[in-house]
Each structure stands twice: as C-alpha cells, then as structure tokens.
Length: 110
Length: 189
Image (tube, rainbow over all chains, first blue to last red; front, side, top):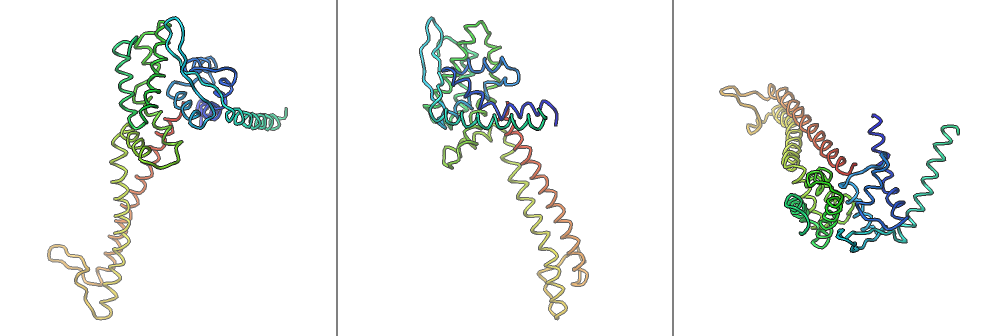
C-alpha cells in the first residue's frame, strides 16, 4: 500500500460527494465539471470516470440533465442540476462527512 | 457530425459502435455529450490529437460506460447480458475462453482424483470377497495390476490427479482475481 493508492481510494470514495457539491452550487455541464475538479489535484478525474458517474447519478435520479443551446458558435451543452432526491442524499452525505472529520480529529487528539 | 474533423468523427463512430448494448437514445446522448466537449476544446484551440489523448482510447471510454452500467444495474435482463458480453469482448477474449476451460479442468481433475482411490477400494473389497471386477483396474502393455497392487496405485494416481486439479483451481482463482482487478481499474480514476 503506497500513498498514491491511498489517495486514489480517497478520491474514489469522495468523488460522488464532490460532484454533487459542485452541481448543487449551480447547473454545470460535463466539461466544466471536469475542469473544476482538475483545478484540485486530489480530485482530478478523467472523462472516462466522470461521464459514466454522471450517467449513473442521473439514473439514480440524484441529478437531472437538459441540453441547452449556447451562443456564438459554442456547442450545445448538457447541463446537470441537482434534484430534491439528490439534495437529500447530499445532506445525508454531509452528516457522514462531518462525522468522519470529527472522528479523525478526535483520534488525532485535536 | 459538423464542426469536427475526420479523426474526431472516427473516434465518435467507434464509441457509438462499442456502446451498442446501450439503448439507442441514451447512446446518441452519450456521443453528443462527448462531441460537445470536443467542440468546446476545439474552440479553446486544442488540437484533435490532444483532444483524443485527453479522452483516452475509444475502447477505454466505452468500457467505462459499459462497466458502470453493468455494476450498477442489479436487474438481470437481456440488455445487461449483452452489456456484459460487450464488456468482456473489450476486456479480451482471454477472460471468456481461459476461465471456463481452466475451471472445468479443475473440477474434472479434482473429481477423477477423488474417484480413483474409491475405485481402488471397491476393487480391493470385491477381491477380498472373492469377486474380481475386471472393469476397474490398470493395464500397461502386458502388465495388469492385481487388486492388491491396484489399491496403492489408485491412491497415488488419485493424489496426482487431485494435485493437478488443485493447481487448475489456483489458476482459476488467479485469473478471476486479475480480471476483477481489471474491472476495478476500470471504475477507478
């Protein structure tokens, strides 16, 4: 077990949470989401991770999507929006996240 | 598809081809979304080669979609089976061919290995009762083992067969494990 393995496991476990957090802020399209994640090295993920994940989150109805025409020769974009079910899921995840952070802080003796 | 060159168009056509098990309306949507990112990147002045490098090979990307739909869809239906088949054909024929062969070998060797000493015991027991079972025995050229000699021989042969079966079984486990880690990598980042 090396550090990179561990980091990739953390990423795998939290990516869904991060994606929902980003989409919650405002409707986001795929490439925009990937770019946002890319700006945080610990969360950087490729298209072949994000698109299938978005598709699953849509199927599970945590997010919904709609195509929107862009202006000035830009391609139409598929925007993702968080649903009520997604919001409920996200707040449940946030509780667990706080719980995890508190646990770790307690173990560290902070 | 307008606005993109031949390289990118080919890429999308391949994705579309690999995603055949996915329902047509969804498939079109997936391709359209990838195309949208291509156009977006093109607008930023990224070359077609760089775009493809960024997206990864069409098989990898298609596998990721298929893998996700296999692992997250608990209902077993024809669509899932065909997704599974498409997935394994992308994973490689190896998994589809090797696994059944070695697992069957493992089962057959273990079974015959277990049966062999039983046959030896049966023949020996019958011999003690005064019966000779000629259907059970071992024959090498002109040598035919007596019931007394056959008993230990059957145990040795049984042991060897079991050992071979056990090796095939280990091989089966290793193959499954390596396939599983391949699938795990696929869902990884």
